[in-house]
Image 1: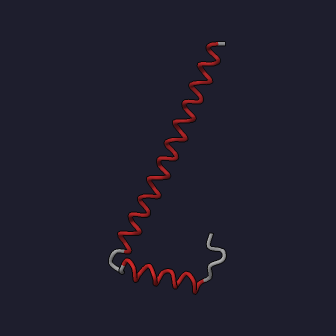
Image 2: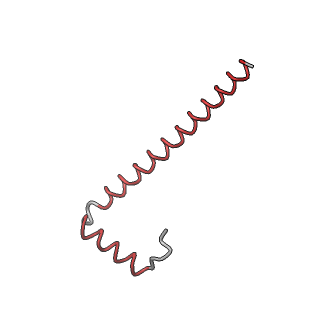
Image 3: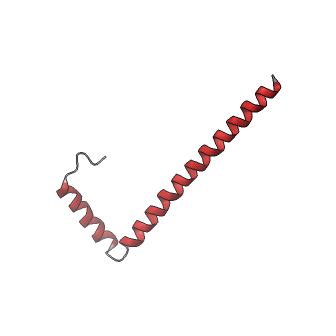
Length: 66
């Protein structure tokens, strides 16, 4: 993802982020981003478990009908 970005480019991006958001809001921004990623992962896991259990129930029902 960051293969074409070197250290100078990343430092410039970091400086721009600090200028835009300020030093005091960076921890809050990081915390919010982390919570968002965590919630997304949990919802994907829950969706996978739900889909798997529905597929198993459908297969069991089809086996009983046959």
